[in-house]
Length: 93
Image (cartoon, rainbow, N blue to C red; front, side):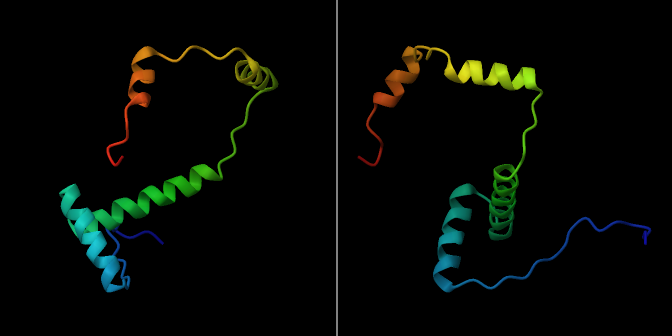
């Protein structure tokens, strides 16, 4: 059943607790986007994570053997810049 013009946007109605809206509004303001855009971005991101978490990666036997070889191989030395950054105290400490 094809229509002449495909819908680009679909409205979604949701109910939130007052304290949830306060947090969402604060996050949206800090991100510089509207509440709707903030919630849309968060929902899409969580959906993508859920999909990736359950995705199956298929490898040929040769690619799998290479993958295992790299995992079991010697650990490379950490780049100095990365080591320096990891040694910094966290901003909240």
